[in-house]
Amino acid sequence: MVQDAKSVASREHTAFIELSRVSKTFGTRDRASTLAVDGVDLQIGTSEFVSLLGPSGCGKSTLLSIIAGLIQPTDGEVHIDGRPIIAPHTNIGIVFQSDLLLDWRTVIGNVLIQFEMRGLKTEPHRERARGLVRSVGLGDFEQKYPWELSGGMRQRVAICRALIHDPPLLLMDEPFGALDALTRAQLQIDLQTIWQTTRKTVVFVTHSIEEAVFLSDRVIVMTPRPGRIRDIIHIDLPRPRGLDVREQPAFTEVLHRVNHLFQDMGVIRA
Amino acid sequence: MYARFHPLLWTVGSFAIVFAIWQAVVWLFAMPQYLLPGPGPVFVSLAKNSAAILSQTWWTAATILAGFILAAAFAIPLAMVIVISPLLERLVYPPMVATQSIPKIALAPLFIVWFGFGVVPKVAVAFLIAFFPIVIDTIVGLRSIDPAMLQLARSMGAPPHRIFRKIRLPHALPAIFGGLKVASSLAVVGALTGEFVGSDKGLGYMLVQASGNLNTALLFATLVVLSALAMAFFYLIEIVERIAIPWHASQRQHPH
Image (cartoon, rainbow over all chains, first blue to last red; front, top):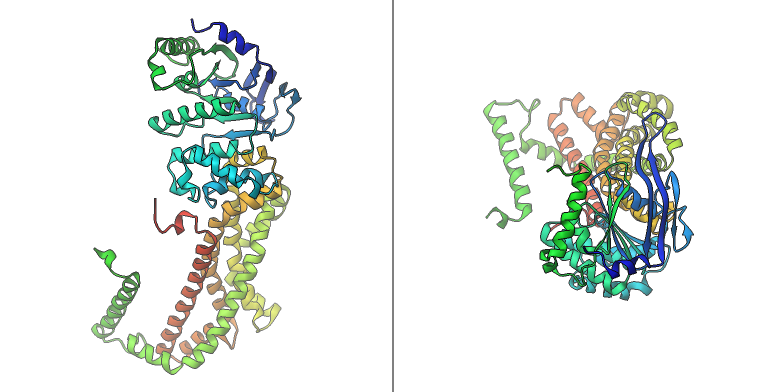
């Protein structure tokens, strides 16, 4: 199928992120507790693009928050670059579904907040921020406010904010979920370009099978709650992948396979 | 095509219509002047008593302003404390809500017993009545932040005080201004109530005097000045708001 020599190579990445037996139970004394994530073992290599794919409520966002150190797992451990994650990890960039831009700051100001929140001076980084904003096609909008931008442009700014401090790891939680189909397709291509030029490690949460397959080196297919890893699919389509890749047999074959997995799990009923 | 007219023209026009209806009612029902004077006698009275009204206006304006500024100065920090500390919230919030259920106007006689007939009881009523909406709206503003925004800030390594100053507080400003605007009209009510209950100064005192003398023209003249004062105060806050939060949806001149 789509697994060949290259997928073997991706397994040989040095594990940059390592999740061992990670579980998360939500709940309080008075309410029944829910098991959101159940015993996830996963290694993600440096510069790898990995998607967590699953139905709503399968715990994929929880898993991402655990990697970010924003949620502590009930069981198991997370290591990034060999260090255990026990507090919010700050050497990362995060992009959420909501762009979370600050209405009172310009595009540049929203990108530079990354440094301000860290207690650093913004001036030394202003030129780099300009360059980054230009590189995502927003050169003419540097001094605009978020409400003057379209949804796609706003999410581009959010991506710039996540990249400006040059973190090795980018965590994305359904970043294109609120965008229209055309904007979404464009941003997927742009994200691929960013990833190919910066070689960041990307963990990308989505419930779109197409999106996961189009973007990823590996797609982690998760079960409905409690979230477990059902399967890991290596995507060996050549890069850069363009719009036409979606029509290739190899692409549709993977879609087919993932769809079947979800059918088997009862997520999609035929 | 209506957009051609200057906004000021609309304001002037709408007031002209109100005055015309007023005058028409007076003529139509042959209103005696002690019940409903027409706009003419009211403005004559206003002109004749302008010096007296003006001096009383300063007095009332100062009372309103003092009550309002005190309310804002205590309410906003209190709301911040309530939002930051769950312990203090549990401690402070219930008695505060209980206090709120007392009609503040009913406290005016008590304040006269406590603080005498000077300016203090009037400021106290204005303060109390303006206080609550500022607290509530500030709390709502500070709380209505996307939890993901706070997570993002934490992933940037920001300590809580910086998240508060750079994100939560600016985010809450539109709600705070909403509370301030409500409080501004309430402060006027509070100051007047204080003056009604026991005073020898201010527009409230003038109203009571004019009412006692059946000088309805003067009563209306005072009302006109009073509403002008309240409006000026409200717009002053709007101007500050426009300067402080030009980015907010309510302040945008050219919607995208």
